[in-house]
Every structure is written in structure tokens, then in C-alpha cells.
Length: 137
Length: 279
Image 1: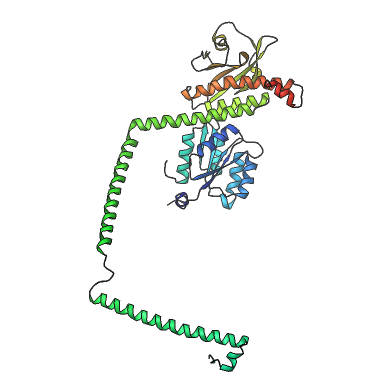
Image 2 (image 1 turned 90 degrees about the vertical axis):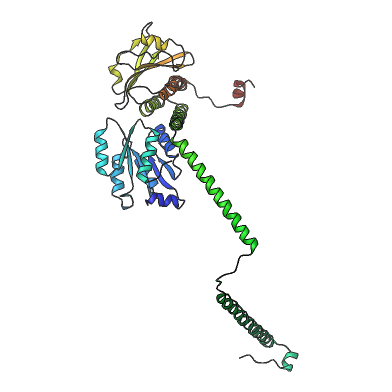
């Protein structure tokens, strides 16, 4: 039994953090994830905002864009992997099709998976469910 | 040890006397209780021994109880059968291709409506030309999947379309152009209002679509959509709603930002506002 299914069985919700500076993109990802009843979703505008939220809440999965002001997604992944509390927490990065180099760097830094823009909500849901070991539906 | 209470002491009760009387009574009642418990224990032991001798480990169900249990068992069996039937029906519905297609179609519609909702919210929140341009870019890139486009704005004084913003290149590389009277661009802007699905697309070599940007009947600009992102090859049905939204809202957004940029700040006043609503 995975940690997520144990938590779901215990009636607890898992915490997801969406880090994206584009408001429409962020809202669409949050909207997609809101379809997963076992998830509670928090939004962050950029990497710095993400670190602020991480300081007060333990997240079970993080979905982050790469290109963001102040602290970008690559730096955020690096910071998270250096933190004992987040070294094993799944991280999904959001990339554009042409940004192969960024994608490879993020995966090398420890990101678990990536989604490509334009995002398809069912793809996001499927990937998050798979990574968290949740059953479908 | 409890001391008996003497007559003399009882006649003149002190606190000590009262305490002793209470303790005495307490112990007497305790002894009675223990005796009753021992008797009850003996009685129960005898009953159990008798039951063991008769080969019965527990109490026998009365005829009424047995009937009730039987009735409940039958109800449980009926409910289990009903659950099985519902599961079988649900399984056959889920395996039905029509059901899956319909579900997929509803899901697509659901996400498309969400995208429209998010996009329109962004347009309403945009109060500067820069914010309108950013919203157009985010919607085209992230929701529609257009990777390169140029936004032309109308110069009404000179009757020109000039490139203001370009995604996937420098706008300076695009030249300004006079408003054409014929050709794909003329067809696209000739509709005289915001674009709707079914209207001319104004496609030509190197251009997927010319999307006119109207505020009411005033032409504000034109979006020249040049290429899709690599993973996309054609417009999907769900894209047309977003294109309609961009055509209407970005035109209004640019016009409003223009007016706002040139308006004299005036304090909100009750009389003036009531006058606006006919009061």
C-alpha cells in the first residue's frame, strides 16, 4: 500500500503545491487538480513564494513551472532536493516543447516528471494520480 | 479498627463522633454488599455448571429471536443480490463505448469551459495594454497552443496596422501595412465585429489565421497567428471558443486601456453615477 492510499484510507487529504507565475496557467492546473478529491491544492506565484509556503506546510507533491521571475523552477528543484524533508517528495515540472535543455536539467536535478504546454487537464490529473499511487476516478 | 459509639458520645455528637458513625455505617454496608456479591457469584457458577452438563455453551434463542435472525438473513441475501445486479449494470454501462465517448466529451467540454472562464477573468482583470498583451500571449501559448503570432494595432489617424507585439520574434521585423481592401486579411476584418466560429479565417501562406480584434464595431487590431507549438498541428474544436473570446475581449481590453491612459482622473460621485444609470 502506498503512502497516498494509506492517507486516503485514513480520510486525510494530501497537499499539492502549484508554482506558476502565469495566473491563467496556474488557475487551470489548480482547476484540474481540484478534480482529485484526495488533494488539497495551494498556489504559489514563483519560487520565493513557494519556499515561503513550504516553510509552513508539508506538501506531498509539487508542480512547478521552469521560467519564473526571482527564483526559477530549476533553482527551486535544487533547493528542495537539498532539504531532507523534500528530498523524496515528487516534483513535476511544466515546460514548453522547445525547452528540452531545461527539461533535462530539471530531471537531472531530481524532478520526477514533466508536463508540456499547452497543458491538458486530463494529462495532469493522470500523471499526479500515477505518481501519488492513487486509484483512478 | 472501628470503635463502637457509646451512648454518652451519641448524646453529645462532636465532629469526631459524626465521622466515626459514618465510617461504621459505611463498613456495615460494605460487608452486606460483599456478601451479596459472593452469593450472586455462587448462583452464576451453578448455572454455568448446569449448562455445561447439558452440553449447552450459551443461551438458547427463543422462537421469536430465531425468526428475527432468519428474517434478517433473508434481507441480507436480498440486498447482496441487489448490489450484485447494480454492479453488473454499472460494469456494462462503463464498458459501453458510447458511454465512454460521452464521458470523454463531457470532460472535454468541462475543461474547455474552465479555460474560457479563466481566460475571460484574466481579460476583465487587465487594465493596461501590457496586461492585455500578456493575457493574449498566455492564452494562445498555454491554452490554444499557438507558438508564434504578431499583434497589429490600428493607427486610425494614418489608417495603418502596425506591429505592436510579437511572440516568437521581434515585432520590428514585421512591417506596418495599410488596411487592405481585398485578400485574406480584408476578408477577416471585413466581418465588422468580433470573430465567431464559421467566419473567414483569413489564412494564407505562413499565416494560420487573421483574428480581428473588435470593440463593438470599432476595429482595434488584428492578431496574425503564424504557427502552432511543435506538438500541435491543427486547431481543435475547443480552440474556437477561446479564439472568439480573444477576438472580442482583447479588442475591448486594448480600447479600454487606451481610454484609461488618456482619461482625466475624476473622483466617483453619487450624482454623476446615478445620472449614468438614468437616476
